[in-house]
Amino acid sequence: MKKRISLLFLALIACSILSYGWGFFGHKVVHQLAIYGLPKQMQGFFYKNQDYLVQQSVRPDERRSHDPEEAPRHFIDVDVYGEDAVYTMPQSWKAAAEKYPVDTLKKYGIVPWHVMVMKERLTNAFRQQNADSILFYAADLGHYIADAHVPLHTTLNYDGQLTNQKGLHSLWESKVPEMHAQGYKLQNKKAVYLADTETAIWEVVRASHKLFPGVLALELEASKAFTPETKYVTVERNGRTRQYYSDEFAKKYAALLGPTVAQRMQTSAEVVSNFWYTCWVDGGKPDLDKLMGGKIAKDEKKALKQEKKSWKKNTLFQENRVIATQKKANS
Ligand SMILES: [Zn+2]
Image (cartoon, rainbow, N blue to C red):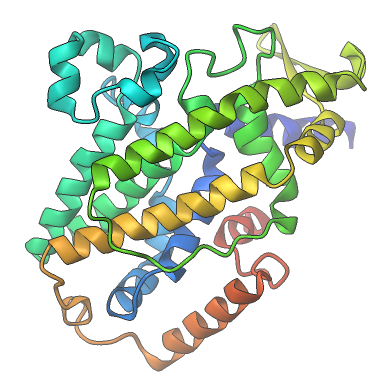
């Protein structure tokens, strides 16, 4: 029994290590919620492909293991450029590349600029009415937007490693939401058109960075009630000892964070919806029902209606309608 528990524990840890930005669980939830926020003309097509979008929401993280270009697309260590850099950094890639060497920009992360690249590609896919490309870029774009919502994706101290708080990254974005999402209020607003997408994604980065000091401070606050033995669990793996935050500590930390993680998750879904919608409008509002050979079938329409009802009541988790947790139960 003990062995089984430790194997399960290792598997969970492996998942956390593999994920950079919201963890696999968070990304999947964000993409599912974003579909509910879409307007009618888009929703049928996106709902029909809900499983694809949810499962592929984590593809950019998986790509990191074999594509050396991938890693910097998920974050921006904006404080490298100065204390107020999050407010003074050039918003456009062209202006930023005039101010700083491209190598430096790539080293410290390019998430807001990469969101703009993906936004263009998704808009083009709509313009060309290419269903496969629409889905591919919608999944990728959503991932990078969601990553930009994570406070620790906007700082050089991305894992608390500079302040003796190593492990904070996966604690905030994986362990805390995986343990507490059942109680989150996740009712993202309906998609709105973004007249200035560049400013919109920078606003996301600014809001994330503003939360960052609290992410560190509340870890210190929570630590007051713990000893090193109760704060961490140690795991031996391949002859190496690794330390992780304990469940008890994660509970205390989550209580101190309050609704912060839930709010970032909900806002992620809103901004993903907004970008998908904006790309569709800018791409000439193609008829997506026609693209998939007609409207979704009656039973699918009924299922969507039920899901949206749960979403509006905030009972998706309770009614087992969250795809990320369904897969977990199956595996
Ligand atoms: Zn990521």
